[in-house]
Image (cartoon, rainbow, N blue to C red; front, top):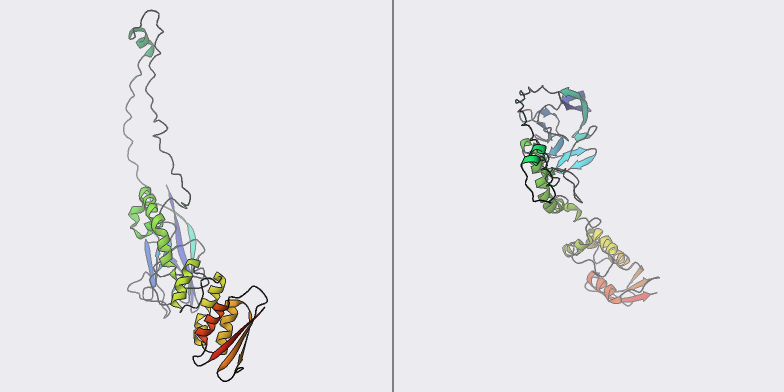
Length: 327
């Protein structure tokens, strides 16, 4: 007799007493609409069809169905349509509800009737090799006697014996995660799970890029090779010769810099980030509609052409300027 783990959800909400829900079916659908859900959470923050929990095999998985207010597992947001495994003690946040996965115990499965064993066939008697040696071998006079024939081996050669699958470098598991998108019957044979690992290894990086593309749009987390793309979209704020950290800082403040373009504060902040120097701007020093820009470096030499280009792109069209770089 075998045993199968049984789980349940302990539900806590601010406006109702604690409740429990046994996960006793393959798929549990959670939402606000009683006509379409197994577990009904009646609240305006819960979508009509909010999430699903897949209980067909362990570990159980949860999937957000594109809900309006989202789903969290242990305070981490769940991306819509993404599967996430559940462990005992995990807390699922859906609207004002908190659902904790609890192991209730082990329940025995129904015993399976065993079929009667087939009759055992009697093995044939092994031949008397000593008799065959005496009467079945002829040899030339003076020749050594041939060794007796060995009985046939009943074991396979080592090369044909079934060996366990040895994981290769980078293979974290023995079955593909893509099995969760197939009916449970396909997980009964381990071959398909291992076979899908080939395609998951090839397409997995592309899938991760698509799923987390928002990280590419954040200057703080985007790869260094993607910074030129962000620079094109932001109106060429940075120069490729600057350090990656300088480029990231300018792209982080791109929105404010575009709003402050043509102002004293905007030009000062732009030059401070790009050069790392102390910037002083004085207006009307050489007459009306003129200004003076002084950079006090106190460090490495600054490329004057880059500074002039920044000023040209950010000064008011009717003004002229004078640049001084003070070491």
